[in-house]
Length: 298
Image: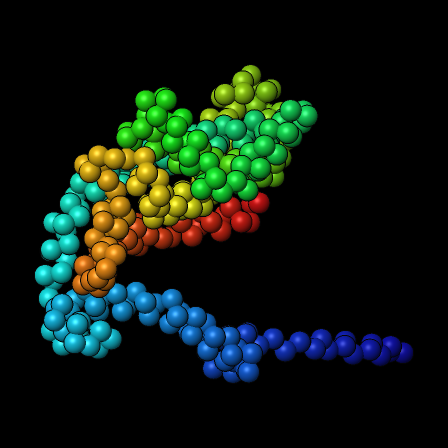
């Protein structure tokens, strides 16, 4: 007598879900609206830059006749004239020295302070961290007068070292905020493993924590570089020697209170931001990876 075995049930495969945004996939009303709004947003930010480039490449006579027309004749005379007027090579060197020095001081002091405050559970560390955060709420214009007197009494008025210290002090609270938040997200087992290996605090910071701070350091350097490079107030007030002026100060010197010359101001502004554009083009991938890594880690 034969026993009939029941036929095995057929497994039904679920239809694969359609990938959103793939080729041939309809975007839908929300997707089209998002793309249209994104395109409009890009145009809003790019149009002034394109207008500045267009005006800088036009002769002054053509700009005076029609300020918003497209260039019919391209000339680099405006750039060559402004290049010599603002002493571009010297101004660029001064700006690079001030920006680089500020970044080094902010990263070193901020990383060490963030490591100490992030790993300490004592009451003094909490109040120290709060004091740094309170520094973020103080406008610079409130302290500019006493800061000027302090730099004068210390003999740092009119020196690049004094300007670097001012920028470092102003950006140190945000650096402490970045590094402290990042250090607190790192597991405590790293400290325990380092102590078992006989490493002290300094060696633990240099060998273990400093490499891990790379992503947040990239984000911080981007912020500090933009802040220092585009600032006008500090070098204008604290640097009296013309040979120490930065790019933005020399570009501001071209501004006539009575007559605005776009063929002078726009080329000066473009020459001022040109090094930043070159820097971002070459290091764009690393900066984006650093910011993304810092956001995921934090």
